[in-house]
Image (spheres, rainbow, N blue to C red):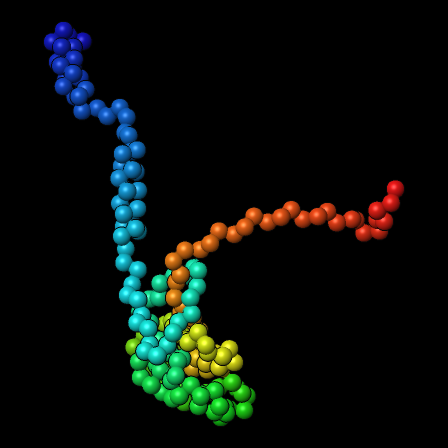
Length: 195
């Protein structure tokens, strides 16, 4: 090889040496992506809280998630669906079912829930035999009887709602539980305790 050719090769190598990547550090890139995901998840809007139906005093609970905007059924002095009164609670508790195979069904509530479920099915293109994923929030008065709640939940299930939630007021803070006392040892079966 001639001397001129060697000099040209050395100059070319020196020129392109500054563009040579010897190491690719991915740590800053990963840190950036983790930060973006963290801030996206922590600042995401959870949803609007459902307003409490007038005349209903919700019971309180220590833990719970905020209620998302959903179809709301109120059980206070009256049974209300989406803010529209359906019937009095006393009538709902007394009325017999008109379906012999479903003794817990409340006919007027079933009709109203069925109309709502059918309109949701039309909008979401869901077949009539499929249960709805749309949540139905039940806001029951804290003095409501459980037998009425059982009838309301069964009626909602028959009307096509499979996702039911019972709403409560969230209390401020939970009290810490007392540490459990150690259990006394129990003798093995057949042991008399005498040596």
